[in-house]
Length: 113
Length: 110
Image 1 (cartoon, rainbow over the protein chains, first blue to last red):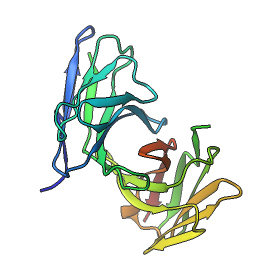
Image 2 (cartoon, one colour; image 1 turned 45 degrees about the horizontal axis):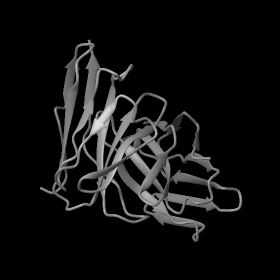
Image 3 (tube, rainbow over the protein chains, first blue to last red; image 1 turned 90 degrees about the horizontal axis):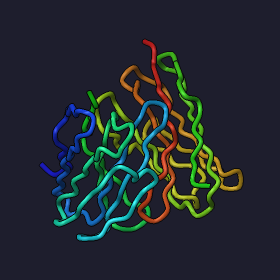
């Protein structure tokens, strides 16, 4: 099946630890994105990438890092510098260009314990 | 200028009624306005979208109305059903970047 696969679905992290969320797509999309979702705040863009080996910061990039070594993969690392990391994280992808549908994965829940 | 303001925050509608969600934007560079539907624990899915050169778009029970001069657009769900109960997000795009509204939690009572 074509789509976007995020893993793990649920993740618990101790304070001070880094954690990496996986995102893989087989839609042959050039653009990939990471969004964070908090109750009552909609979706906020963390990072996006339009081409392999290149990515740009979104609105809330502090405390996060990404890589884009392959077209299909766009992992997100939540570092210990992120002060409030507990949230629902959504990976997405699209064809390049305005007006193209952005498709979302099923999301990953991260809880800091 | 990058914000998209969405209202109401939550909405309760009787089965068969009309659900209306409104959004407003400031940045005239936005050139694509999608609506996403999200069920609990799932990622958002595209519901319907419109470009600013069109004032209305209808797909089944879902209609987007767009007012370019007022910089406002709205989603109308006709004959609302309990299965429509979800969170709805409006968004505005320029290039490949989407800016989302805060979301509206819709509950349709049977």
